[in-house]
Amino acid sequence: MKLWAASAISDVGSQVTVVALPLIAALSLGATPWQMGLLSAAGSAPILLVGLFAGVWVDRLRRRPLMIAADVGRAALLLLIPLAAAAGTLRTEILYVVALSTGALSVLFDVAYLSLLPTLVDRDELVEANGKLEVTASVAQVVGSEFTQWMAIVVYYVSAVSVRQALVPDRLRGRVNATMRFLAGGAMPIGALIGGALGGVIGLPWTLVAAELGMLLGFVWLVLSPVRALRELPAGEGSAHGG
Image: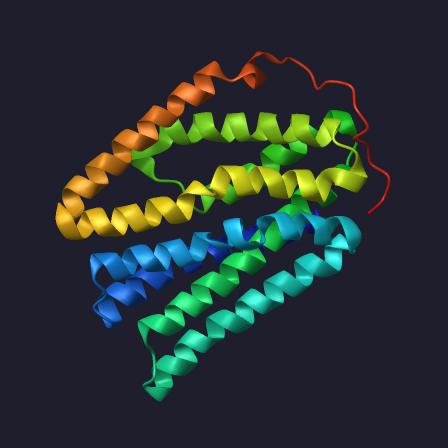
């Protein structure tokens, strides 16, 4: 319950950041499409910059204190924005720094909670636990027009994470989870830069069309994934033993 509450608060904070920073950049600072792309890239670049290192830290340090420190750090960083606005010194460069720093702390939090969960529940409860956490995270970012695709992605994610948690021993969970985040999220900053560049060349409407087509192609990987054929978690070393 405590992990769920911490994850829920963190998810809400993350979505506020995802929505608020671009709005501030566009409405208050008049950011160009390229600058918006840079801002989005700054928020996702930490997956590439610190993702693998985060896995090592999570495996070597206590996970609960890491999660608390990450959330407190993100809150402190976000406070810099209204303070800078009140002082009349808010600039896009400050938003870049805040996005990059909060993104790094988000990577650390995510890897830590994914690695902590299997030590709190039994192996046969991993799917249910991951399902509850993912539904909570998804509620914060649901887009009605993409509900079907969103549901497929959630189901796949819960299944894939649960299998990974069941198979990977505790001493390696941080590194394995960080590696998966690195691989899965590494394309995000590249896509953000491409999106910003396309927005300046072909305009925002056509850029959004191209992005939607790319998201629809993601269904191919879900359909071909072997995880969808599993009916029960495979045997492994994942089990609850404190944490």
